[in-house]
Image 1 (tube, helix red, strand yellow):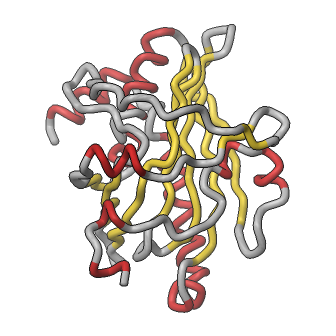
Image 2: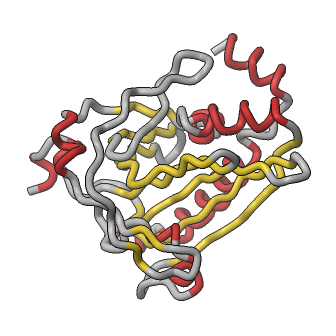
Amino acid sequence: MSATLELWQRAVSYAAVGATQADDLLSYPPDGYRPFRQRTRIGHGDVRWEYAWTSLMSWGVQRNSGFTVSVTQTPPEAKELGYTPIVFDEDGVPIAPAAAEPEPEAVFGPDGEPFLAPGDTAWLGFPGPLPIRAPIRVVYVIDEPRRKGFAYGTLPGHPESGEDAFIVDQTDDGSVWLEIRSLSRPSSWFWWMMYPVLRVGQVAFTRRYLRSLSLPIAARAVEQAGD
């Protein structure tokens, strides 16, 4: 049934939406799901911070890691009527959702790329011996003065079932950090058989993710200019 629907109409392929915000679920994940969390220092200072969060919020981690990102058109009313992901406090206790607010206007980064928003749906693509074309949806966004990030959930057709979160923050000493959180498992019997290959790919992509925002900023600008 889901294959006949537009991508924005399809429900995510896992139940614990927003789970990457809850420390207890990363420690005691749902049956069959593998948790992951890693935090890496990617630089220092306000210039690095500005570069890191604006890149992150315009799919920079994915694009800098070799993925293509094709954001699909989603009707505004579909975002407004979509489910509200579970939000947890710092002790892992669910918080009741606030009343719905009007959808904010689109915000753009320094390069003119629009920042992602909850409800955005996209295809992640990666060429190679086993090409990947994986559908995802942004399920929450973090927007704090010194902490920015988002998580996407998998849609039917993705090799995995689960959620990935990418968060950057700047600490009091000026250090800038990238944290990756995830809960995942293979999405079908085929991908369970391919699990060793999938795990190798996960490890490789995680390394790319953690390096994606740590290049010298001038070098990254030159690289992008040649794209």
